[in-house]
Length: 472
Image (tube, rainbow, N blue to C red):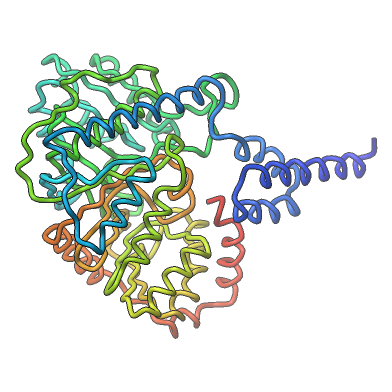
């Protein structure tokens, strides 16, 4: 067979394989993103499609997913039946949002929570170390990145001390997010007697095989079943290679919401280990003196449907006065852009707070390609210039907020394992609004005239990157 004939055969095999795979298994937007790659680079596209355009999980892991859903169902029933976790009455405007999330098979709203914003990056490390040092029963951590640097070593030292006191420490680190440090970190933690596992280990075959682009992106912590952490911050130093610092947003919680965080950790732990964490000491149904209503939201393959995608749509449509979305990565689909445009036309003040310069150039270009439409519609875009803005939160009408690990891109909204909490509390919303004002003061408000004056080659690069936005 000649070289040309061989190339043509491979070319057509690639086209047919990707067409069948995407049409049968992928959303239309993802299918469209594969088409230009197939036309220009057929052989690399075929190899990539074998990795990424396939079922989320195979064999034993798929069975564990089914069982994990049953664990979540039982946990939800346990939460709803506890006298300390009764669902509070919500304002009429937000009851539909809470009902939507509960019907998506996640968690109900629970009252009696105390939710405190950890003020800055170093304060979060200090607070977490202090709680680990005070632990008496267990410490559970899930993180996307666990680096072998000064911050990581400080956390390891606190965990070592806890383990020596007889505290059971269980740690989940994402296999890809922590790739550069995983071997050293796992070795150090195991040497301390700590049970540590890589979440979603990268494997292309075998019973535990999963898609390599599926990641556990959650950042949560639970100490003694009484204290919880959730937000955007990984276990890694704040400083970037260029000298700038990450800006994060994390909350420390107590009350019934911690039971929901514990349930989520137990589900992830079961998926990776096959061990069901059902000890009563892990799920403490204590008196809850706090005042905030909160609801855990989790998305990922163990949940049916795109929970965060539904939630973001619900927030945008529920907003009457103002919605502020803070995210380091903004690569939406067309439906989300239209929802934001519709909100502006209803008279809602729509503001996006994004980093002026991201840490992934292709993602940044794709993100910028949406600015024309949003600015034309009347949305406000603030570009944060005081370091890398890595915080992820949504603020609606001064009454409710979402805080967590999710970005506003299709990977977070439809694929990755993510976690966040909705807080239905005006006092907390005021605290988040104060954070928004600080971030906006450190940002440049992008004008339509300024944006339209950018060079033509930048427009071309942005539009090219946008073609692949569903795959980023």
